[in-house]
Image 1 (cartoon, rainbow, N blue to C red):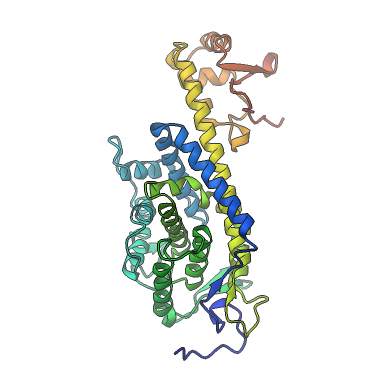
Image 2 (cartoon, one colour; image 1 turned 60 degrees about the vertical axis):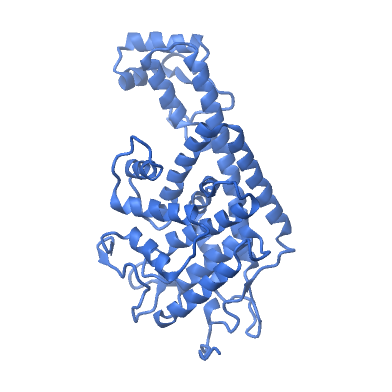
Length: 409
């Protein structure tokens, strides 16, 4: 029996009498869920068609981008080199150097959530995840409770704004309620696993994220853990659909990267879902349909963005094969790799201003005369195309559809 007294003026979903009965309108979301499945299938199909080695390389890089994104959402900037080293270390690559402890902790959490998606999820496991995120026991220079649920007497609030003009976006359940709230969540998480229930797996991942973030069980790290749990739920869903599929494929969805790109909308949707706007006091369930719809659409956009990454990887592989047949020199190979790595405008990248004779000479250490000959040779081989004239002459990799960003004069 629930003996909690309802607050006089409830504002948040955990204060409602129906909490935590989160529901969504499956009929209203049917089209969005079908589209999400379609884009998911297209992405996995593309990965399956490019070959194991290339697919693994794409997965590794997308794992790095996901880790960068889930940290950046919280305002934490990770060192890219350390992150790549940590991912390589986790994949047991022979040339993997040591990694930064804080970076390693996040990567370890992400890996555990996917590689052991079917293992029991309990309070101890969550506490170990949270501890891994803060190996020094601090968040910045502030000491925090690590490896245990929050227990501070003060309210756990999500606040923004200047000192003295703070805006409270959300207030989580009191610390005294957290253990019971988390146990209820974990029971539901086990009971609704794809092998036990008929709930749509993508929608379930949305509810997992909303519910965990609403409890906010730790003093810090809740956002990163909540996104890891959403990925874990998606891995369980993938395994239910195809037991032979690698749970690591969840990394290629790029969900955290999509959330980072639309961070304001992400926070707004989550904040709206956590408040009692439009929910009648006498309701027997809490309708989370708008949040689930936002999450499903974000998942769909993420799959489309990752499809473009896979297609670009295919184009790059074909271009490298073409270049290898031309027997170019090491300087030319270095420049082509620099241009390929930079990407193009459509992928959100590109080599700013294009490659020039001067840039070629500086990057390779060659003389300007040698740079001119090398560029002319690459142009004749069809590996580069020329843009502009005279002093404005610039070169770009000759890949159809690839546009390079231009300098604004």
